[in-house]
Amino acid sequence: MNSEKITKYILFSASLLILIIAGGMVYSLIRGAMPAFDFFGWKFIFSTHWDPTQGHEQYGALPFIAGTLFTSFLALLIALPMAFSTSLFVAEYFRKKRIAVVLSTFVDLLAGVPSIVYGLWGFYTLRPFIVELGLSPQGFGIFTSGLILAIMIIPYATSLSTEIITMVPNELKEAAYSLGATRMEVIFNVIVPNARSGIIASYILAFGRALGETMAVTMLIGNSNNIPNGLFGTGNTMASVIANQFAEASGLQLSSLIAIGLLLFAITALINAFGKYIIKKLAAR
Amino acid sequence: MKNTDLIENERNVFVNDHQKVRNFKNKLLLVVVVLFSALTAFPIILIVGNLLVKGYHQINLAFFTQVPPDTFTAMMAKSSGQIIPGGIVNGITGTILMVGFASLIAIPFGIMIGIYLYEKKDARYANFVRNITDVLQGVPSIVIGLITYLWVVISITKGYSALAGSISLSIMMLPLIIRSTEETMKMIPPTLKEAAVALGTPYHKVIFKVLIPSSLGGLMTGILISISRILGETAPLLLTALGNPAVNWKLSQPTSSVPLLIWQFYNDPNMVSLIFSSSLFLMGFVLTLNLISKRIAAKRSIQ
Image (tube, rainbow over the protein chains, first blue to last red):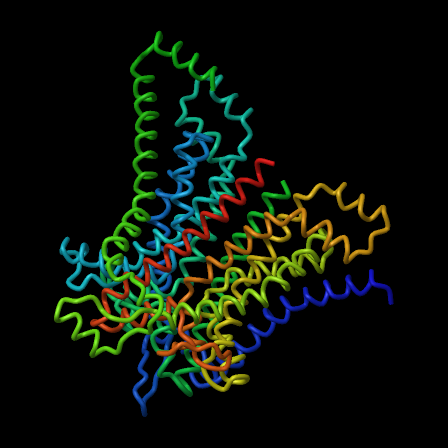
């Protein structure tokens, strides 16, 4: 065997590592979740009852699935106008100007802030503010965590949609301008239709981020094992319930937490694959 | 953009009601965009400012050389209005240990897999690996913590350990490094590689003498960004490394890290002011790494 082949084999076997990790992940999660699914069956997903008291243990994941979806959708809703405006600011209105560089640096730094620091800021600054506004007595809940999540996912939504908006061909925009269109009309009749699928993909990927965020949400959502009642109700997300209850869990409870991990894994993988698929179709065009 | 100005002038001559409305809407959108953009930049200023104000007075020599005090000492210090004695040295050393070991695993493997994907651009297997890498990149950190718990904590180290923490971090790093390596290598002019191959250079030498040196800047950016990502990770470490009140350099023992300490302080009402100093320290470090990597990336794009 010559050195050429050896190098190629080494590189190839390194690539197997990714498949082993991913395959092992799915295998271990399913195996770990088996006891819970065996015991509760489909009721595990649809039951709203989560009670770790010894003797009459009962685990249903619906409150956490609901909490995850509520907070993430709220985050997406809040992040949407912000991210869209920021990407227009950077890619269209002030393209290549110094102020655009400054703004995009700020937004990039936002992506670098650790989740736990967001949680602290939410707990010590945002939460008292919400209490002061009289929106909720303790300041914990869906709204507070959704707001923090929105700040956390804005950079992800912004950076990709900025890139996509920059790629809209100048000729198209110029054609519209030459017909007398205002800038707003160019944005909504030329840029947005042209960049639509890319912009949507960037929001889907940002949504995927929000689904899996743990620490900041754990510190702000109030950690109650029920379906959140309303915008200011408390709850738990799939990620936060794992972080909260993992330390004292064993047996059936541990298996149930792993099952929630499996569900979370499946949901985020699907959402991400969907977003990446749209982007790949774009790149091929 | 020049001709739009012309049109703008022309338009002013024929202003009518309809055009007034259009122009007004146009201006309104600009105002809304600027307003929302400013609002987006606002939180980072608030967060950094908040940490600076609340955290600076606790940062002293002891902060970097001592372990955190017990709750009682902290309570005494707090009630007498002094700063809390002690620091976060166990967290700093733990972070160095775990991030270092994670990099040791993830960087070589990541670069190798990245080169493999770059070489096999359109092969079906490579595409599959690329897609799986994308999926791995999107896996929530808490799930990676669960997995490492099952793989390492239960079966290998029979207890929470720095090894488990490192492995969870390296699983998070790997996809980032793979993708950045591949993206950087794509930008190397193919003629460079062809020249080396034409001279009969063996493949491993092409990698070490041509591919890696000519993409060093990009590789560094990718590595720095991935390190800055995992520096602040808390959730996976909560499930794998747990934390340790003392300095620990052993891979087989539970270990603390700076974000883990922040989490502990957060759960202890007596330690409040240590939270902010530790967060300030962590943030400062992470943001500096981010800025450095941006600088490197910007330099490269000029060339």
